[in-house]
Amino acid sequence: MQYRDLLLGAAGCFVATALIMPFYISWLRRLKAGQSIREEGPESHMSKAGTPTMGGLAFIAAGAIFTIIFAGCSKEILVIVGALLAFGTLGFLDDIVKVSMKRNLGLTAGQKILLQIIIALALALYGTGGKFTGNLWIPFVNSEVNMGVLYVPFIAFVIVAMVNSVNLTDGLDGLAGFTSFVVCVAFTIIAIGTGFADIAVFPAVLASGIAGFLIFNRYPAKIFMGDTGSLAIGGSLAAVAIVIDKEMLLPVAGGIFVLEALSVIIQVVSFKTRGKRVFKMAPLHHHFELSGYKETKVVGLFTFITVVLSAAAVFIAI
Image (tube, rainbow, N blue to C red; front, side, top):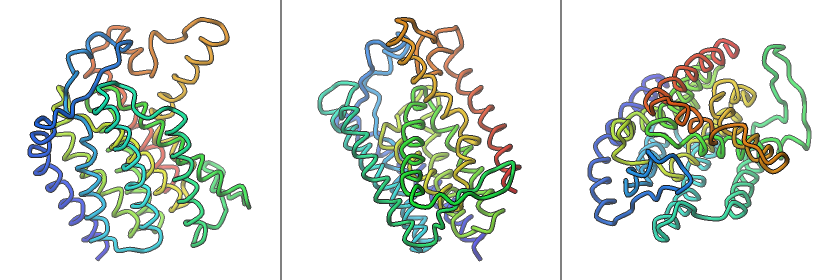
């Protein structure tokens, strides 16, 4: 019964997202809700200015609706859908500021981090009041460590880290979409294989919604997911991993997200301490671009790496 629900929910979300997108893109164009490109970015990206953004709103809405219909409203599902909607709303506010001010920067970094922490802590406190045990599963050794009171701040850290990592990956046509799709599929398999078939409905539905979106987001993109989509994906994927007690597999399956975030941290620290840049440009995908790789090649390479890492995560879990 649960597998039928999973398939129906995924199919429904894909069809709904794919059908909605053309009308949504047309509506955004009429509103002139286009993306502003940062001046310090690669010159090849300047032609993308004005491309409609906030595309994530379509698969967020479809994902939430089809998850509730086919997975119900258990506490765990509410945590996951809550993460999707809360971070999607935060990203939407950020995108609205960018569009209305006609600039690449939306909310300030301090505002975004503070709001992300508040949302993450709220989700962690709500979730730990239920089945969350405070035990952290350690892969490879297959043992658990009880974190006690540190578990709540740890959950909040995992969520915030994942949200920002996926957000940093969203810099090339289809990059965040294809890599997130693969990680969603991996966690669908992991959830099923570890006895969480009901929870598996969500990553399956989200993967299908992203697939419907990618029809229009692959190179050359007709629409961008914006922070609306990337923050929602990061937050909800982290919530899935936490609910099924597989938090430590996030950096395995989402290794590309980790590398993108690390490249920014390394670049900033190196420039501030030594006055030198390690990469031609951060995040990492821009370094590859400026090294002569075509945008589609970078997306293909990063997606392939994500497939390999996600397969490893599934193997470790099951």
